[in-house]
Image (cartoon, rainbow, N blue to C red; front, side, top):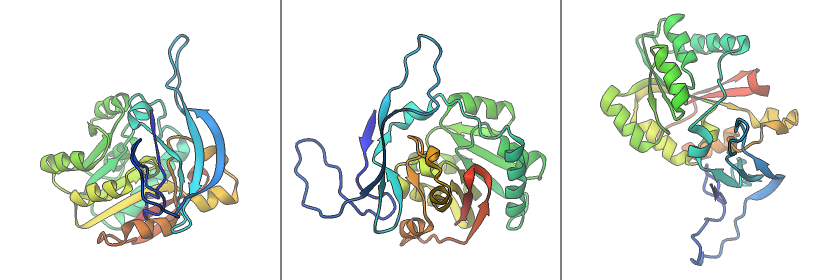
Amino acid sequence: MYTLQRQCRACGYGEAVTAPGIKSASNNERLIPVFDLGLQPLANDFRKDGEEHSGYAPLQVLFCPNCSLGQLSVNVDPAILYNRYCYVTSTSGTMKAHFKLLAKELKNHFTPTATVLEIGSNDGRLLKCLRDEHGFSNVYGIDPAANLVSDANKRCIETVQGLFNEKLAVAWKERFGTADIILARHVFCHIADWKGFIRAVKHISNRDTLIGIEVPHTKKMLENAEFDTVYHEHLSYLTLKSVVALLRGTGLHIHNVTEYDIHGGTIVIWI
């Protein structure tokens, strides 16, 4: 149901998890436990009477003293978390207003003929907003939840079902080419393999591609004691220092950072 995570997914600091029966090399590097909520049920695991729940997992945050990333001590199988997904991100007026701000930011860099790909596109409403209200004609989505992909395709937003990884990136590029704008809104910190994500994103990028990663800002989380943002989908609690460490040697760099008020304080890291 879940695997242990003892190494920082941004910089690699910490102790590698070895298979049972295999002796690991001595390593004094340890991620530091900073917040422990014990054994907790999975979020968004709503069931009708008589239906079995998906289960429970430890909910503990570890801190990397090398790059300042916070991350959970376990990774719950994403097939359990996301195959049937109840949370729809974009029905509120607040979110619709946020979409307009994002569209304005994108128009500062690209013409509406740019190809836009949203990773973790949910029900496709952001892409529909970009297309119908702001003139972006080439919009595509990727999402692992079958119910949400069905909703997006009903809105004529071409959406591929699957967890975004290098294999899916290769298939996407063969079908659609590269993307000029890649958005990953509130999905990056749900992914266990950050280095694999970066390799996959690079595969579908061209030299002018702008990548927008939108995440809750850990600075705001700490300032406002937003402990309710700690749950099994949120594998990471991101700082800019950790992103700099992740991108080192990849050929990618942080271009800009935009702050927004939604979700208790959010940033978009433009790469």
